[in-house]
Length: 379
Image (tube, rainbow, N blue to C red; front, side):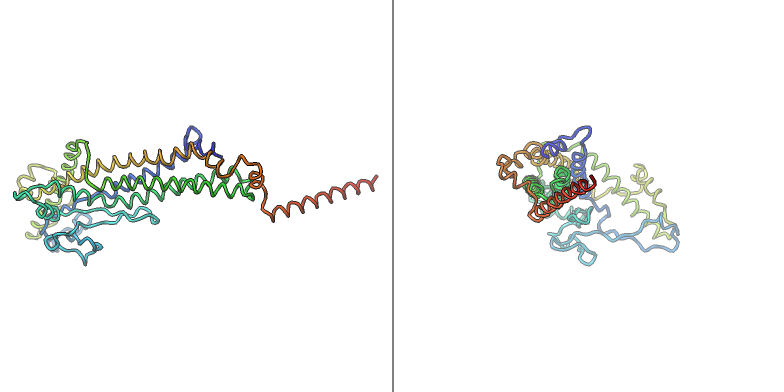
């Protein structure tokens, strides 16, 4: 049995199922961190969508639907339309939290959504340099850590999935190896020992990964150069922000002139044209805030990638290695396999089944004797 478990852990041409399943657990964890990455509400603070005109196109699929502005909420509040308040009214507020629940049995994973006015107000309140408009590194750190708060739920989900996968695999192996001994203590105790073995090492992994997560949430730290990643993030954010500004431009102009709405595809095309943007849109007064968010997003991307790899290595050391190398010793010690009396007791049937077995053997003996007597009469 120990050799079978070890072969599942080692993997190979004919035994990859367990390895693939554990890799899928890590991949799901990676996806949860990706889904929980922070996002930005691109709407210009203070801008309100004008009333929909009767002259607009009746093709609703091409007309952007006005949406309410997403504003920060107080830390103790559950985001809802009735509890949203402007950042100016809640200087200590937090950005909206969206819940992503990938598995009904798993914990909810919160996604941070920043608004531009929240970013500006947060930097303004945290500015201790005496120079207006300064980007404080301490504030940046606090905004980054805010985005990492959802990692605790992702880690809990990861541990639950790993525990289910390992326990299921080990239980199946015990069943397949001892199915002919299912009525003995060997079968029962082997299940108990392996369950305890797995749970112990899963708890060890949980403690270590929780500690690693806590390290990530203490202070943003990396020796990786974020410049290229930050540039790519800034390009994506700038385009999305420009598209939003173009939408606001068209909606305001069309409402004022009572003209037909410009299709969304046309608006995106205009927003992607630097010449049109320069001639029709003013310089974006929120560009500095967008740049600050780009740095936050770049760090999150780098840190989450590194964290997933570290967690995978932790699983390998704390779970896979013991399953590969320590199961035999754990079974030998716990089952007292070197004691003949204990082994005999482990292999014995339970008392009721033993009595039934003796009774059936006696009946078999009587049947054999009767067959012999019948053959004698025939002779």
